Length: 134
Length: 383
Image 1 (cartoon, each protein chain N blue to C red):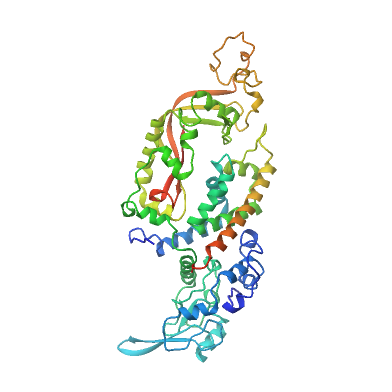
Image 2 (cartoon, rainbow over the protein chains, first blue to last red; image 1 turned 45 degrees about the vertical axis):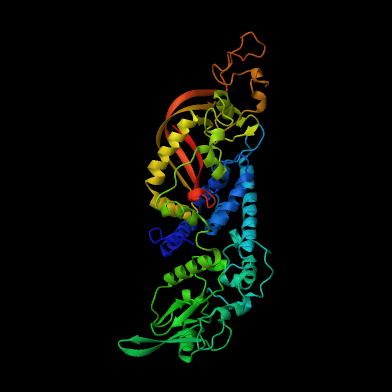
């Protein structure tokens, strides 16, 4: 693993930042939860691609995915006002049909997404801990 | 009180995959984890090296050593010189290994050191350099082990530093450092500068994005103004869904050259100019997304019902639908007497056309598989 001094990537300073980021996200989960939905789903008309992006995000930095699940869950448990609109704004959820679905439909979609992301996360952890890993 | 019982106790947890590790159940008390009340304990059991693993990785020493909580004497001794006089510094990995230490730890209610050694020459806790039983549960930024919360009389050092150090060690051990992105960043100019921007279709290939497909006039599915207006009205172009945000605005760069110029301007003014910051964010698996000035010719249309798409049946009759409204003013070029001609008394479905917009919005994905560790995920013009 490359770790140049000028970058301190993977060094103590780097991990300090990762830790600080994580603490900040979890102390105020709404903005990061929005970021997560935007990264995974907002620009994908076919939301299935969002789950492929999740797999990639996990493989590149599990701490990001760990924070993502924690914050998404926190938001779903203590939702902002007009939660359905919030979900649609950040996830770009639109259903086929003549008109967008109800706010409740957006929320239901998010609940299902969180469970699916969590399942993939659990699966990833099992694979990541295959023999040969520390 | 946070507590981590010895390895042997955790291996009795139930089988992995019995429940979630996240959300409401993701932050159980450490006691819950140890007792296997959720999947975390189970995963720890499945993932944690067996007790033998640790003893086999211990540094060579003449002193006997067992796993923490194993019940046997456990001391690492090394002589150090202090003030010119040999001093025996003793590091203990078990709170009961030494009578004096046992008294201290009992007073502090510390029954297990977890990954720490107690150095009574300082005195303070230190990470055990040969500890190998890290799991994902050790990656949390909150206290896990008793030495991280319980103060020992005379103890020096900072509890928060213990927690941060333990988390760093666990992250490295469990997941590796940055899993590919750093290597990719370093492969270009030793990480001192980002790679050159590729052609946007190539960037799409790197990221799985769709800039060329839907954000450039004359490229992909956006072959002309009609397609941009169709997206604004129906959120669908040629049978491909293209959802819109509630603004209801569909826009494209005027040409592929305009798009390339605008994105290059963003790369120069943002990615290159702030590379020292961005490379770290990319390594942290974080996107870069900003909007910057980059004047560009565009074509844009907006529905007269922003945020709500028209049903496909509202497509004008002259386009094969059943609607009687024109897609946008001037779109219909047939005879007014044609039975499929739009109703001139009704407003078009969309308004817009060519314009000059001043900004570009770009999102960069961290991407271990892309050259340089990143790829342009999307880019589009903004007013």
